[in-house]
Amino acid sequence: MTPDQQALIARLDGFVSQLHERLQAVFAEAAGGIADLMQQRPGELGPIRAALGAVESLSKQLLKTLKDSWDQRIEGMFRAHGDDFVSVGEDRVEDARQAIEQAVERFKLQQESHCLGAMYPAVQIAMAKTRPCTSCGAPLQLQVPYEAESVSCSSCRAVNQLMPEPLVSNYFLYGQEIFPAAAAHAIRVELECAQKLVDRQLRNTGIRETPEALQQREALERRYWETYATTKASFLRRPVEAALIDGRMARFRENARS
Image (cartoon, rainbow, N blue to C red; front, side):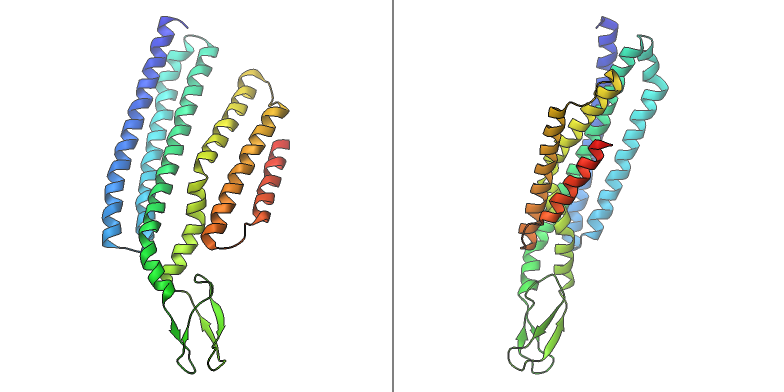
């Protein structure tokens, strides 16, 4: 690589670093606002998700800045050094885009997990509440705290229709998605990076993925869904959904064949 090419790479890397600094500033501001929301509206995930939606919108602006800067200014500088060097720049821009998207997803999962964790003491109190039987007034309790149930009163045998507390219902509704995704996020990042390398190799060299590399990606995919399903089962206090893992792996193999 010539000194001029090294200078262009350094210039592009410096620009990407500035975008990451701006993204970290967005995260810091959002984290402060979310902490305030958790104090003002405890037990509500909706406002937190709205704040995180604003973070995602700002991150998309940064991605647009990255793309526009490459298309309108930077690519021409790289093209002056030949098509192969343009590919070097495109790969770096792709790496930057992926890193920003992954950082945003990680931040969202961290904040949502923290919010749910802060809700849990109130959720425990709500789950421990009993309801009076509509016939005799004897205390009744849901066996599965986040699902509606028909509960037979042990005192008078009357059947009562019990609904979960809204706080409990929301906690488990969101938690069964957020906690598994957060637990498996690092594996998802590995998977996305592996897929990127496969696509890049095919695009730049025309060489397809080897069977050994595909097996490694398949093992990663299985580890992701096993981690996801195990975390979900633990959270819901249910057996692991083997069908979930099998279905996702069947989809992976189908996509790999296409």
